[in-house]
Image (cartoon, rainbow, N blue to C red; front, side, top):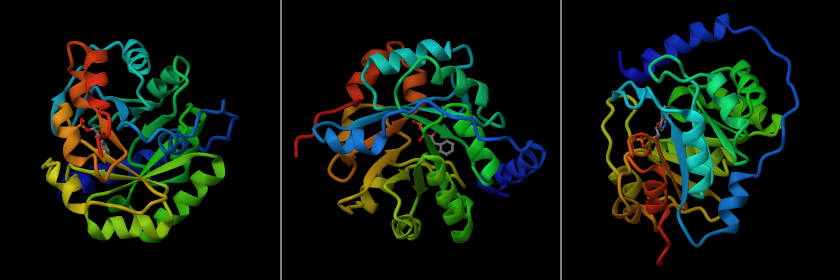
Length: 253
Ligand SMILES: O=P(O)(O)OC[C@@H](O)[C@@H](O)c1c[nH]c2ccccc12
């Protein structure tokens, strides 16, 4: 069984045990889509809080997540992504909720969402964006969760890894599309995934996810993408602010 299948099985069990919760009102956060569209002069950074991952094991277990989030905000990042999956990532909805109280930026709930209950939890915990992974859902389920998330007022980042999934995300009308450079089945990471897909619809914001280490890496994808999503490299940086500033490169095209 590949990783994606394994985690989806774990999520099915998690969701079955998850109590139904009522929607509680959230503070408004700025829209990531508009923030990016209105400031096209540099590559936007979505900085992630990621203690561990299935491919790398422990990345930074000792991190003070609130300080890390404040450092990201001070470095001018455009959104903060918080892993909420306990399984394999050592994250939680409590992390998301605590972070939402110390930053004003858009916040992405990073999880394997397969059920509406998770959308409501993400929303109640303070997220303004949720991730939906095309490879993890049927076309019908993807549409259903996308519509439900939009109804709650959430933005949706639709994640793809190949041409077929990209077409599905575009057909859905997704405004934020993420190309994951990491194959969730094998964990292979290459920026070539983003370079080769070269997405280009004019009303869509494209985000290249995973595997970025330097400004030079970012320049490889900057003609087709408006933003990048970075976890490990920021979580391991000795100077978080400096690394975050380095990755927000100015567009020269
Ligand atoms: O740590 P990296 O290589 O910078 O990657 C960050 C982010 O893209 C990655 O955490 C991610 C992208 N899509 C996901 C889906 C689920 C879990 C994690 C992810």
